[in-house]
Length: 543
Ligand SMILES: Cc1cc2nc3c(=O)[nH]c(=O)nc-3n(C[C@H](O)[C@H](O)[C@H](O)COP(=O)(O)OP(=O)(O)OC[C@H]3O[C@@H](n4cnc5c(N)ncnc54)[C@H](O)[C@@H]3O)c2cc1C
Image (cartoon, rainbow, N blue to C red; front, side):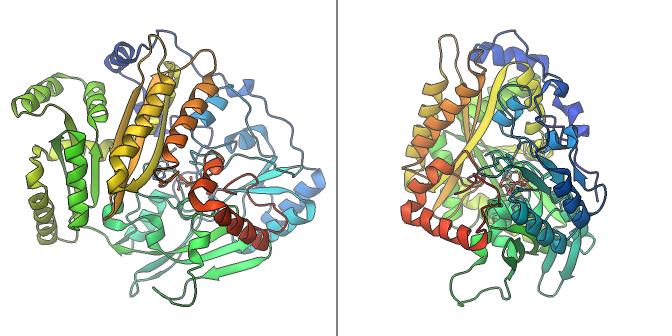
């Protein structure tokens, strides 16, 4: 197992990440000139300044919980509870800086196996205590906020001890992993058998197998390896009314696929304790490359063409002009100035970066797949940047989150949101969401940056991922983003899904009805009542 996550590290992400987390001077100067960001810095308040109410759990209940999980695995200390108070959204980061109220769990409980999870749920039902399943805590939609609902207390059920590879079936290419296994550990366990999962979201370093399943996560190589739900073969779930095991065959006509109910259930229907995942042989060769296309419309058309001809690279990621521009500006340096001149000479007026990455079992397979992708791309007249641009993206792909503390210190509001729709509506959706964000965040002297990329493409449509950088309001820091997010969600709601991979949590719950209908919400409620009749599981989330 790699080191336990220090949940007190938020924006800087991982202990070694803090070194990479600073914002270079030239980047800050550029942001100031581009957005109207002021010179005022707002460093983080010490965590001792945060308000943490005493645990509401009586000693007797703490003792009962400890009887189940053993001594040292029920924490009521301030630091541990604070560490599980919310996830990693911009609003969560602000709350951990003392801006707004944190929802702090009354205890952190660490079970070691499914049986212990079952027994903990019994204790929580008996005492009417809420339970928030907690994986890596990387939710950006309020999924792990320790809301009480109608309960007098709530615990964070941290799955950190469920960190084992349970079994490998190399013939069927299925591996069973416990829910608390983090991304890098899953890959390490599997690599020992010559296998890979290939699920690499940007939150890979912290997020867990259970969390991936509970949120219908999508990794950066989803075009090649699929979304997480495509990888799930079997599930083991602890619910307040019994244990549930699902998945006996790769495909089945035995009624609706009930695994789909658990995948995306966000801790509201049960605690996932084990997931059997489809695995593949470890790739032996990789090739990442960068290209530039002229303009978003041409770029999106090119990605659609790749998807519909079924020749997408495993990683296919198209940035719009703003994202490409910000990427270049934040890098800075003479090479970037030279690159700009080169693109201008090649007639590229609106550069959109396209990163393509292939992973394969041998050179011949990689060559064949790469040739098919590039042949289909040719009519979009890409300008080749070469391997260094692709490799630079690959090496920096977990870097973004690490700079969030530095950006917050500098007074920046930095957040992302995502959606997806069918190709025929993609341009309209992008224009609507972009417009809503720009309108909501523009103030006299302030010009927000709103960037967008496609990183998950399908034959029928694609995701859109927006990143916002703008000076933080000094008047209403939480409200500034809440208003912008509301405007974006209202723009999304009639045109696309409220979430392509971040899930529903608290933030998107008001928009779920518009997407699945009143009947759909009723069906979900009915299922929740059957599996969690006492309403202890993740109060206030999903439904
Ligand atoms: C910087 C950053 C980048 C991100 N990039 C991506 C990305 O590229 N792709 C992507 O899909 N997501 C991304 N996310 C979102 C997030 O990482 C995913 O939602 C991830 O799947 C959550 O995993 P986790 O283990 O951290 O779950 P948590 O955050 O701990 O929990 C998420 C939800 O799942 C529930 N849950 C967790 N474990 C279990 C379990 N075992 N049983 C039942 N319920 C459970 C929780 O109660 C909560 O509702 C990103 C987040 C951040 C902060």
